[in-house]
Length: 179
Image (cartoon, rainbow, N blue to C red):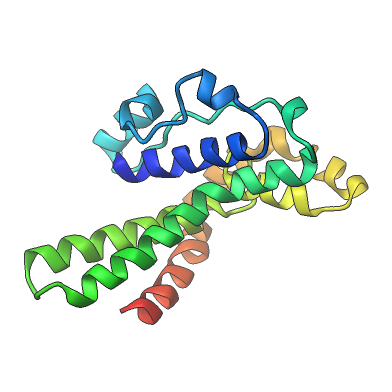
């Protein structure tokens, strides 16, 4: 839950730094995990081992460059997971072998999984908004047209094992680089 809180806080912090105080006003500019809990996401985490936090609210009209800034806000969450994994790799390298190093390794792996999963360019994941911000206006409008099918596409990718390949291949590569 702490990892999810850091991820969601990073979205809030990026939005705040880019000129939007919506997350701060709604109590989401905090590292307190309780502020970021989604009741269904938490139940799913407890019963199925996969969960999610509440999406961070932001007002596009408060952003100086809405197209670019949305992408930055979206990327902030996965970036925080990548940076956490990097920091944890340093802790892992100095930890004596045993329970502590195993726990640190698992946290490092979890952060990488969260980062790469969230970068899949399918709504409701962060990768969708990152790609949206990178596309030229005409293509971005076409990309937005896929938004309503996002959850169905994501379920299809999970059921067919595509998500596993998209996530675990880069996770394995980065883990080998970090340890």
